[in-house]
Image (cartoon, rainbow, N blue to C red; front, side, top):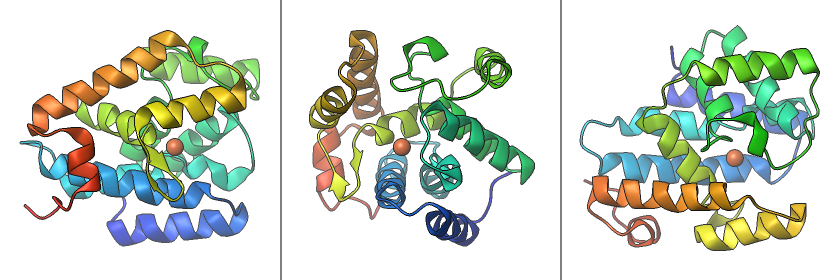
Length: 195
Ligand SMILES: [Fe+2]
């Protein structure tokens, strides 16, 4: 089940009040990107893409955490009955389908990590998982960024960026360029939403 657009927006506002920060705007940018790209992908639902983009980092409601934001978001959405959003809270951080390459602290218990690992292992990624992974990698807090710039920024802040993940993000970009028939940045920076 998926919340409505309005309910998702309300959940995000409420979460920002609990833990204010630029992450809320990052979610809005990711949502707008997801909607724009989905609108040009045959068979994808732009409304669903927007809602999933908006909620992918909702776990930040519970404080400043690394892997913890994934676990918290996954649990929170699951508890509200929003399974599709819960799935994205988990999959968005793992273009490579493993917890191993996570950039940041593993600040959850071993039991929680095992729970995420098991859930991740059972997933067959679909285009919504791939879409939000892509949008997460181009969404800055004040607008769309080139993926290379955002990855370089993460590398600066965390000290490293796994080459495999870097390559995977570029692969996602190519994947959606093929699906939409458009160059990604032309689509995102341009005015091509209405179709
Ligand atoms: Fe994000």
